[in-house]
Length: 606
Image 1 (cartoon, rainbow, N blue to C red):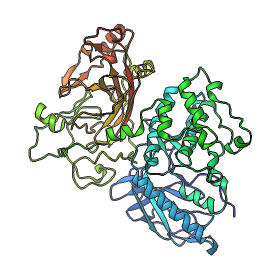
Image 2 (image 1 turned 180 degrees about the vertical axis):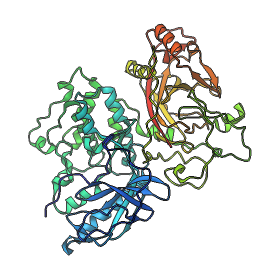
Image 3 (image 1 turned 90 degrees about the vertical axis):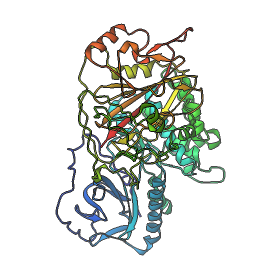
Image 4 (image 1 turned 120 degrees about the horizontal axis):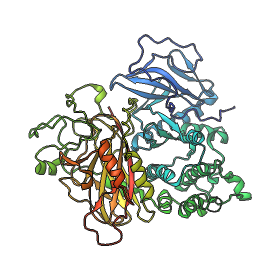
């Protein structure tokens, strides 16, 4: 039996700009029954509450449909287990094995498909594919996922030509290694990492590790079709022949991830691992690319590509340590804590605060939580825009429901980092071009000029936030003591200082210790308007002020002007460091302008 060697059973990502915007609702009309032996289900077919509205991809092991969720009124991707070499369509929806001799293989593949769905549903991380639902019916199985839009890492590298710099690759590695650490802690392994199995989501370029293709591997194992399940250059030697001396484990994913970074740097894969056992022709990139990247970075990649497991970086946490990233588990503890007291309802409570002013801008507004209510007397809000707009009235529309249904109006538990919502978000209006200082460029400058020995890592368990439903919680860890400043740049070029604020006049950071933000029980719920939002997290040895900006207090937070006159003045006055760093209040040493910085990119969606 011949099996396809492609990977079309994976979750399908529609490339940005590949086709016109899809309609918000499914087309009307009954579905036509396919002829026996047909492959995909016809458009208009209902599978429970999901109506199929298109076919996103069809491969050797499954079909991915675009579907409309009539229950929650959102667009989703629905994946059907359908190994075309083993089964066929009979009647309207039934899947039937072609021959009894294929029954065991088909059943094993379906069991693995279901186990994969359960696995992905269990793990909630912004760089792992999310599964909303899975079930068995019609002789087969289905899983429902968000409809992601983006581009594969392989295609991104092809389109950009030149190799990305170290900062870009580190920003790629940080969330991917965090995601792998999450699954490795449960003794689960991906075993199929490659540049075509990582996508960069539209708008944020946040990396997403595609589904594991478990059914493909099981069927390949049972039919001895190694070409189906392994990728030469990315698969380490232990995947070719499991033996007592060559067990698979976390180091297996370490090798494949490092091989993907090797591909990004060199444009090619390392020599196939099986050939390296006989004659190792691998040339360390610490030698071939010396001077183009830091020695620490290149050495970490070389170590992770050791041909034998006992010569290789043993775990994702060890790989992160070699790269200079914080231990993955530390941020998990820092950013997934629930407040000790329930968050107040968005719609109000028995001790309702005074009505908040109309929300006016960028995508984040701050509720000060229990402690904040005592100090500020009301729910503080963060408004970064210029054009006041009435606050939206509460609605019971299903389109405003969170990714997973909840029983109370309180925010969903932050111990679970939900995947991005599938509904495409309309692009926000482009910032108005202004003379002088470009805030986005200054964000880039701050990140670029941060010294390597003052490292700051920042991450959020959830980076796609639904307006009026989700809360921003994030964590940081720095290699040096200091004080944190957090700036937020909205899609309309508005700028706010989230921290420090009137409630937290200083945010001390202890070297090596994870810090959950916002402090205490504070909340930062997502608000209008939707669009990409950048958080710049800065740690400095001394506290900084922003008097030179001439900002104003707004709901307890400092709103920094971005008008042409201010930007021009700051541009002319800018010295050795960016004005985004602020000024040292009481600096008596020569390290006044030292700092570390990191960035978190958010998608605010409806």
